[in-house]
Length: 376
Image (cartoon, rainbow, N blue to C red; front, side):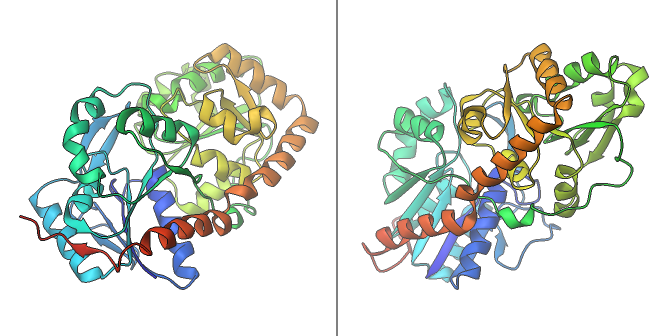
């Protein structure tokens, strides 16, 4: 099958949707399908051979974050050419309701279109206001996928219709084995992975909890991986504890795996706006003992606390108490690790990609293929 996949966010800045598309594409390619991805990307970005650049992205505030999107004449022309030359049996657009390549692709293409909805938000004025404008594109979608109950709820409330539920995937084998990072042996280590400068990732809550714990636990250290301003992070921690905070910045895939295998407790202190939690499934695959905020998406992935401990969202004192309890109980950490390793297999791409392919086959049966829409 010839499959075209549209990524809405810039490829050269790591994110959950980009990781999802990358792993789905590679799983489908490994299964023998021809896959091409189009994505915003910087002109000098290093792209996999299956990715085509639609031009650089522009940062736009969206859903409590900064989304790097591409929308304009250059992008539209590149999408149109990519669709025309691709000869796809099915087109798979991600987040078609936001002003980026997915929306452009829906306008341009005709034929079977599958859309995956990732985002979850309780209130979105922009979606409510632009819903009628979006309909001309969204009505062309013949198959809908939501990655979680929360994303499905958002779709139903703001755009109508329904979707099949297929969770985000993770390549479990990529994370199962890894050597700890050098210099982090001994003592206790709490870890964080995410954009340091994005408020909804909750790093300030973790920093406050670390400050509460550090005075009483002289061997405690904090390992932080992800892009952002290191100086701003350290300003939120008393100077006496600066030497106990490790800031790795943006890490390679290899070092990310090693980070998961370095920490005693992996913390996901997100404040909301998450519909799933890719970082959780990665940590679960590595067998990390997880402590996460009790937002609905995280509760679902962690089996209501069976595969990872939970704390009250946004409450640094609650985080500190739960972290201390885990650090003091290696038996419980080992049990959570075992539960996580078992629970994560239902999210492995060997299962998830097969479910996505079934949707492709269903919608592809309705038409011969994706063509460029020549409507003026």
